[in-house]
Length: 393
Image (cartoon, rainbow, N blue to C red):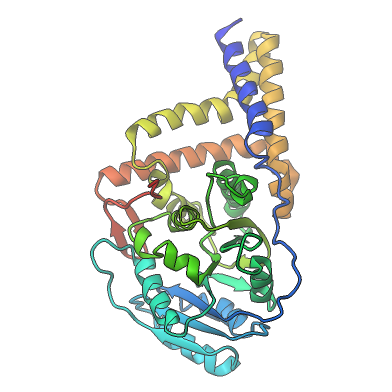
């Protein structure tokens, strides 16, 4: 066997394992559980951290204000030192829509050791606990909810106990309009599912834990047990860190794809998506040069190996390399098609996944370079030179 054939066979073995042995991550059937309505609807406090979101709030905040929820619910928007009038926009929207009661608070700049978002969440949760709500809904300022979203989330959580969930999270359907969004966004969710297979996350007793930060319903007692958010105050990948802490505290968690929760934030240019991914990519590798050194050739073998060996095999007449590379590319494409269908995108984008993987690989390398330049995770005018990854203990 030639060296090219060995690479092709190695890629094929890797993709057969991913297809069958990684929690069927490529399936998109993990949707919000349907349960009967509770006899008594629990109280909910919705916490929305917002920094410079004056443009987003008119598209999203009304969807929370008009929630059709039978129980007691209120909204706390935490204006995180915005410079664009975010707080006033929120107040004006609340006065116009006359829905759920809204409170706007401004905690000031974060103390050392806190990321900005979690500092805002801390103050929102602290204010919410004064009313002793049964649940906390943590949702971002760019997330729009259908009118029955809160009702469905609470019903899915169920009653407290072994049959209920302490954390219910939905991966909001991200905006896919521009060419770059079509190419990159479905792959972003695909790669997330590959790292944290939803089926494993949702299995009782599993060690895999993850959440999607844009929509997290959290039982208040579980938040207290897990010391949320103090226990994850430096985390950049705060949603995964939160889920891990809840699971370590004995809580049951559920994660799935959303059908009625959408992110409206646009990422029209490649540079916008690049910043979004690169700000936390190296944190995902725990800022480890060894993990980065292993990730680069690993991704190259898995994603670039199939098309590369197919072409090389055809050009050199190496039949084994061509067949193994082509079959690996076909398996890779097949695993990506369900995500493209979920995002209502052309299935012809499936074979382009290796190209998108190269972009993500470059984003990860750039994330590491920025980290060692002391720029760390930069977002909305704040830079965290040495942010922590999702903690393992």
